[in-house]
Structure formats: structure tokens, C-alpha cells
Image (cartoon, rainbow, N blue to C red; front, side):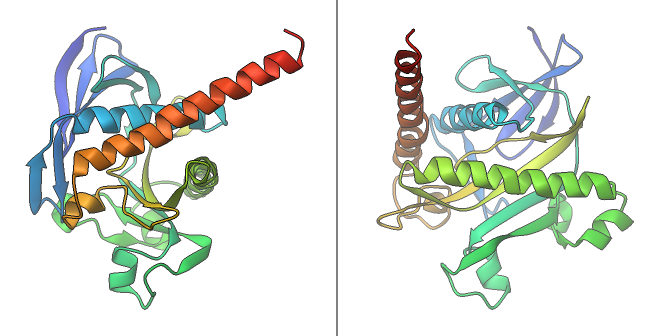
Length: 253
């Protein structure tokens, strides 16, 4: 596969055409931003951490029936993905009140949200990603009623899967952002799922394990991202191999 023309350069990722019409390459750069781009830095290996965690989550979701754009990794920073027609929505699932929902509404920090709250923003930097309701989404013809229902149901399924997975590693999934696109067979999860797009807390200490470490100068960002990578990817992969081995022994293989 050959990397072709640059299609899009965001705050931390670049998307390129390839010589295969149905596939694109997403490059996870070492750039990191916060506060609507008001704070910017370049941190060595940051792109690799987000790429590897995203690949792991996408693969995990795929194993559990959630369609994502992930195809394979080309190298540590570059991911081959399905060429989706992206829907300009940011779908945030919140399990615990934190961040903007506390700043904008009368929630107390760390209040559990049961059932989870779905917040949808219009993806538009010029308008600072304003929040939308269902009526506005449909009036703007961003998606159909059936597509919107599918997006919400998929977001909740992803939440259940990731919340359980992370809990087994002693990590609380506070909230996270998803983006979706139209593929050949309906709505697929796209973009990334990483420490940049999630809010994660250590289940024992409450320590931040995500981009809040960068936003609020809570410590060494890359050391934190590396620890998350080890806990999520390495530990989960090792546990999966043990389960597979045990299942084979149990079946007499």
C-alpha cells in the first residue's frame, strides 16, 4: 500500500489517500492540544501510544460485533482504515459527571450518571463544537432518524464493552468521545479511541489517566500514557492469551 495525497490534517492526526480506493491511512502525530487549541505541544511517542491503544480498542470492539473503520497498523504511528463518509458529530457518553458537564450544568463533580448521559456536539471548530439536540440534528439533515438511533445505540454498546474491559484493569471509564461515518453497510465507528478522547480515572486512587494530565499540568503526560498502554493493552492481551490456552486445555486440544 502506498501513502498518497494528504486529505486532512487535524490537531493531532493526518489522513492520507492510498492507492486503494476503499482505504485511507491515518497518521497519529506527536502533537497534543487542549482548550480548543489554546494549549499546544509536541510530545515524543504520543502518537504511538494513541495509535496502539486505538488499534486495541477497535479490535476489541470488532470482536464484539461493533463495526469500526480499523483495518490494520502499517507501523507504530500509521493505521489503515476503511474510507468512511464521516458524520460531523461528536458523541460523548458520560458515566460520571466531570469536565464541561459540571461547568455548564448543576452537577456535582464525580456524581454517577445512571443511566449514562449521551451528549452530542456539532463538529465545527469555527463554532466551537456547539451542543445539539435530536431536533437540531434532524433539521440540519446531518443524519436520518434511523441513523441517529443507530449512533446512540452503538455508543451505549461501546460504553458497556469498554467500561467492563477497563474495570478489569482497575480503571474507571468516566466519559469518552466517539465519531461515526457511513460505510458500505451502514454506520461505523471511526476516528480514534484513546487517552486523548477519554476521561479515565484510577479506580483506587482517582488519579487522572488521560489528557487531563496535560490540560491541568498534573504530571508527566507520556509517563501516564505509557502506564495506561501497559495496563490496557499489555495486561488485557496477556489475560486473553491465558483464557484461550485454558479453553483449549478444557476442550482437550
